[in-house]
Figure 1 (cartoon, rainbow, N blue to C red):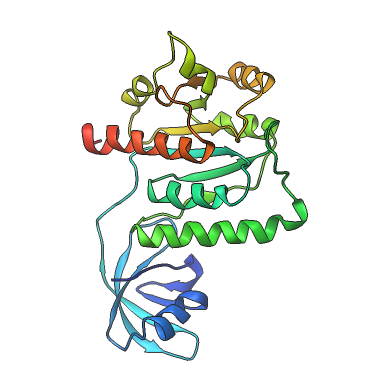
Figure 2 (figure 1 turned 135 degrees about the vertical axis):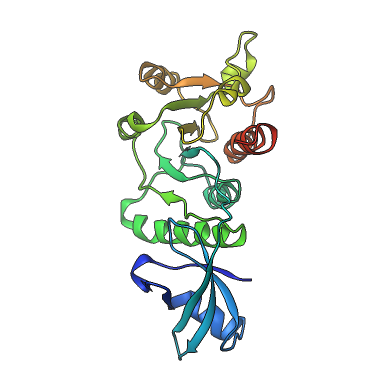
Length: 252
């Protein structure tokens, strides 16, 4: 069944009204009919199997048949703070990071980011990011839409970090040391419900000043395996590792 994330304001007890792109998809792409079933998901709740009751020109009304108990979320909340990368790499990180269970994304302006965040284009860019995350969440049957926070400076990111129990820097120099901080060891100590913030540098990595500043604010530098990863690979490695340890290996 097709899954759609529906805003809270479109719900009225066990009735839901679907509009916009989702209604267009149901009516004109999927060509669904009265009594067809779909899955509707409030943004931060469990999903429901719904039966279509009415189809208009640009809206669809459906009624909840059954609330689903299945939860496809990671047992921990992982936020990816991504140093602004070049080209369409951010789109890729958002899409694949959502598929792998990230709970939030924070783009941030790093010293070595070639791309500069354009405040004038920010709203349009964030709308595109939101669409990417929504489509990936529907495709992977997530129960929650990851949050995309506005772009931050390093100072703002450090201020944001105070609400997290675990703060990590994926630091390429850590991969070259003999006495490296083991990412696997940190993951093995995570508990259900923990909030984790993982900072990923842009193509050129973090500057020494950034690393020192993050360390001063309780960020631990970790290596993500013995190889130097591309910026668009690092977040996916971290999320896949957390998923394996907590969902497959330990079954939290």
